[in-house]
Each structure stands twice: as structure tokens, then as C-alpha cells.
Image (cartoon, rainbow, N blue to C red; front, side):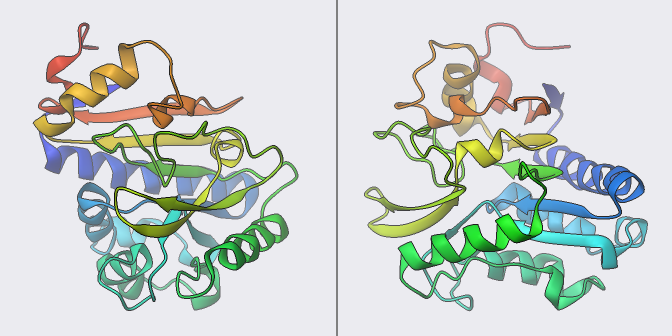
Length: 241
């Protein structure tokens, strides 16, 4: 866990992580595969990626962008994670359009999940591994679109699932814990005092992934990072130095 001064510092750390992880993956595997998240902190990080020097630090021809989850809305909808990422940085960097793989939130959720799983099976390694998965943490302990109330790791070999979020009264599509935990690097970005209680519970409390789905995130052979500002870390019993 890295404790950073404020939300701006967390966003900068996320942007720098994406650049550094991308450079390493391109050097080693000739391609960088990243699963993006939604939210305010990622939005600010993505905006930083649209600006020099970070924009010029990656060979965008070798960057492939995916999404960890998506609301079942059309891509032009204001709630679309794809729209947010496009406006924040994808439209401003020289990434080939074919390298951006969105979840089709405008079609039947089950079909969208199956279609996206087919894309991931075709694009990723065997076993399927992202170089980087970015995640947030909801005030209820959810991450991606893995919500409380259902055991988050019951998918077997499935890579993507459609879920109905009762708290939002909408369908969403999400990658599964299997796929998250196969990644080379997984990073949570968390900021704000309103996240302090849930961060302390998820990070230090009893393990109950059905109630706090973020606790299911434990990369098998990869690296797990927590990029947290001081306000969000305020309830931790032991704050890493």
C-alpha cells in the first residue's frame, strides 16, 4: 500500500503506474493489455495520460485497452465507462481504434458478456492475463461490478458475467475474479474520507467476500497495489510508512 497526500497524487500515481507497466510489458511481450475502471480518480489519471510527457511515453500502437466493467447503457450515455475513458484520454492519444475493446452495453447483458469473453479469449494469453487491471472500491465493498450479496468467485472458468445491480436498478457487465486474479498487476485507486471505513474493513477486517467482494482480489502470481490518499487511509489501524 502506498499512502499519498491527496486525490491528485493518487491520480498521478495511477497514470505513472500505467505508463511504467505499459513500457515494461511492451519491452517484454510487445503488447500492453490494460483493463480500465471508471470513477473520478481514474478519470483524472486518464486526463494526465492525454498530456505530455506521459502521452509521449508509450508506443500506443502496442497498447490494447479493455474495460473491467461497464454499465448496460449505449456508448454515448453519460454513465458509460467507455465514454468517460474516450473523453478523458483515448480520443487524445494516437491509439489505433482497433486496439480499444469496449463492452457493448447497448445489447442484451448476457450476450454482451459472452461476446466480450470471446474477445478476451482470442486476445489474451492462455491462461488469459492482463498486464494491468485498475480497480476502485465502492462504499459497500464492491469492486468492478462485483456487488455484495452473491459469492463473487462462483464463475468457474468464466471470464465475464452479466450482473443486475439492485442498488442501481440496472444491469452491468464485469470481468470475473478469475480473470482479475490472473493479472500481472492489479491496482486499487482509493481516495476520500468517505472511503476510510470500507477500506479499513476490506484491508484489515475479517474475510467475507460475499459481503465485501473486493476481498476476493488476490492475484495468483501477480502484484497487488493499493494507491490510497491520506483521507481514505484515516481509519486503518496500521498505516504503512
